[in-house]
Length: 118
Image (cartoon, rainbow, N blue to C red):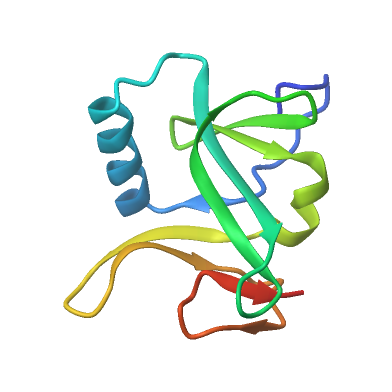
């Protein structure tokens, strides 16, 4: 739910149980304050045009606030069109270990899995 307006907005992204577990571990290890939330966004760059932003941050003026699986999430309003419906997961395997992004809005992705085109 968004806390920025009186309207109820469905959560724009999904965090899997594995991602939530890792995010809570990081939050605890880094001793984040209650002001910090998970920033999910995009920025220009990467081999396909956009790359994902994922990290803990404090709220900024243009952010919507969501609570997803118990985690406070900050997302810039303008980024929602690129991120709506995305699933963030944690992968733990022999060839890959880290957060993965399954973005239904991506027209093309790269081999590294961290950039896309829309």
